Picture (cartoon, rainbow, N blue to C red):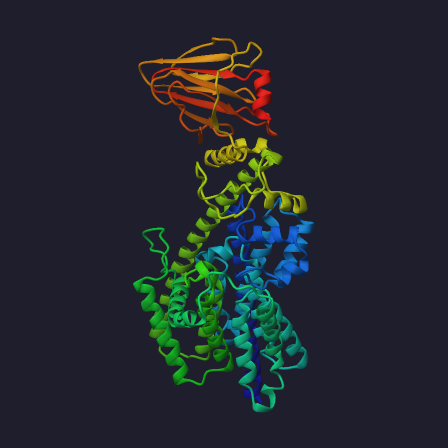
Length: 607
């Protein structure tokens, strides 16, 4: 009687201690989620749609929803639920503000980490699983996913796939139907769903013979739907390799992908002495080999669970995926693949080492010290790179918004085929890979609004951003120096206003300024009349360099040089901003005359 009475309180104390540990783990997890939200929110300012998101917006603005969902275009993925999300969000929230899309992406990332915590804790306990879950919310090595909303389709597929694994842990018809639906969502939201299809197939087929085929529909139905799209509607990318070439690449991609993921988990992708990020290093290869040996040895010496084999199948499919990607996407170190790989590899490790007991206290202490140090270094490395990635996306977003402001100012004067970031255009601007043409932007704007800055707001942006706005606007308006016959003095013309000059400036003849530099080089800054000016180098013995500026204090848009004895017109079409352009005249010597247009000539030149 006394033994039973003492055993019951002991079991109760153990249960209460376990419950406290679970509560504490979730409190830490939620605190980390809040910190990640504030951390990213601080660095995220200025972001807007980018890359594929602009492509989604353009297609949704110009095509039917059915066409966007299933006729995805050359080399594109099947993204059914994400496209439905974007259609709803673009149509209701619009695209003027990016914050709702970032919040949605952060919530998805927290859900991924939370589902991992539940799945892993059932095998190795909350205390060991928690660091991995926290790391996923600060995974800077997967900055394309964690620092922006660009990879929302991938996150949706990952959440649905992890939820499917959770549902399949127990067997019932209701759970099987839910698992089938979740897998369908995953596999039709992003190709990483194929990895979860492999996991579902193993979890189903590893069961006794009486059950395996009776439940095979759980994964066969989603695979059949994906296969029908792949065969009937998918358009292969024009630069895709042959199947034989892709298969030969698989072993290399598998090990390089494993190395990348191990580097991301341990943080060794970044040296503590520099900010350079490199996944495939000697240290990373050694750690990957050690991981492979450790997990393999554990699988040989124990009887792995069905969950272990399902995760192994999922990882093999995920790591091979880049080998089958079209063109330049074939890169196992791409940040877009890192988060799914980290989640699945850590789940595989949790299944491999479930139930492991270490008797020696010294060994246990040493492992705790090593694990704590590794986690601290990894969290530091990833958080540092995450902050850098968020800052880069913010900077790119600010530039894109400035480019769109210039397109708005140019309005109908700009060609629909004009591309602000055309690589061959001169002068060049930094590439953000937005891929937008003016026509596509105006289609999107008409449907969903615009994230462009109000012109007055440009003044508060960095000079580099204002330089981009000036260059894009001048190129959009096709501002250039064109030869003309005569200078055309007119008393009615508005003369340029001298802002600053190191030369001698004379206000003659009427409507003009004459810049004289004698025998030494000089520069003059002029505020131009609305329609532009004519420029004559009749008194110059060398080419005269001219450059325009408007919103920026710099003169970032150079024209071609004005040749000696040449007279040319610098015509500026009207746009929707009252701010005047400024002209920088760099005179090597001699003199230059700059005149405002006469009313008649202004009308003729601007028509």
